[in-house]
Length: 416
Length: 186
Image 1 (tube, helix red, strand yellow):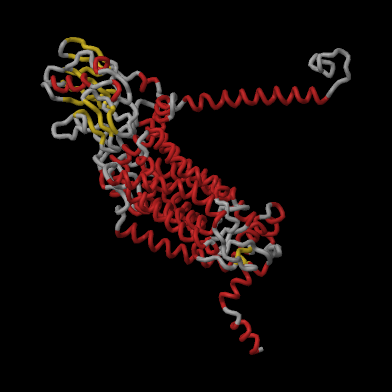
Image 2 (image 1 turned 60 degrees about the horizontal axis):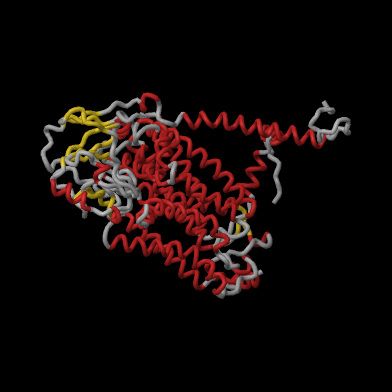
């Protein structure tokens, strides 16, 4: 692709000193994308949009919020009742967090289905896992800020996870708290971290996109781009599609914001934090439920914490656990089915994570936890060796034409 | 400068730039590492409990109002402390347990020097929830002590972990009897 020199004199002056115009042209306009991307490839850009969404609504909310145990709860209620459009900003931010996780999870499962984590995209994949961890940190610290009952007890339970560390655990937890329990020092530092983490996320997102643009997007066929015929420029083809995706996502988000803003939250978080009264049923937000189920499935404190951590850390070595040479599940007849079994397993884990930790629920959570790890540690390595993949197409271009049917272009030719 | 002693320690040897450069890089690197630690250390230490937080006072509990079989919750360091005046059956049950049945092996004698009075920090040793069993009508779990609803830990009448994910017994805080009816926690 050529690098057009800007016609405008001022732009030329800037370009000579800092080549922003050619940089934007290279990365946002002419950037060659595989021509066969489907709608599952929307969710990366949607996640980026949600990041901006959260930062913008968050900054506005921060201007009215007070990080003190005696005032935090009331300051949030004040935002809801007194601040102009405050209710909208808070509901947009609160449900925006859920939307962010929803699109990121779809983005991750897209990667799992089409083998986007495989060579040469391992570092791109790792950066994505780092982003997931950072998001979880941002979501958790943010959830504590309103200082409701669930905020307080979520902070208590999660910080206590660190007490499972042998020998130094107790000291680490007091260091995290800055005291002998969850109290004002913790609320203050969580507020600082909640404001900091999104900007660290922005930094890692830049690395993520850098790695993406260096080795280019994967595609539904999972085969490499071989020639210019396999690609189309990012603009206007994918810019317009990303805009369409954004419209669809905002539609869903606004249904929540305007009609059921508290559906995904816990009612008891509208009761101010009480350090002497644990709510009868503690559950995290929906996006943490599968991990919570894994934590509770293990009848040992340290073991549960390790299993929960490993459930995400295992993704780091997935590129090597998956021994198949074929990326896309389209050409992997068995993996294609086991992918859906795995997805169902994660959904059941999420469901059981919301149930009380007793009786049959414990059994279900243990079976699902075992399958979760078996999927990565046993099925993926063995399946890649046993499975016979279907033949891959020669090129993206050829596969796209074949799908359209060869008759069409031929018929068009005859008319000339 | 070139004739300094750290050139293989041989006087009069030709100046070896490599050796001197290695030395400089190593010392500079070491100084850099020490400087980094010196900067990071106080930054991390600021997050520890501050002096006023550490200086939290003790709490006194008047025991005269507590009847046999009754429990009260008092606040100490912003955490609940359970004080239970145990019945004879509860004491007997706690003392009859064999140490082999315990995950965190402690005798009831160690935990309650005055058998009638059991004083515990009311924080589940699993993930910090407050176990039920202090109020009348609360579920007390399979062993008649406390039950943590968060993740299902059962404690016995000595506050010892018997079943569930918690690794340790409920903590017994430092306390002393000021008089027969007054106990000072902390």
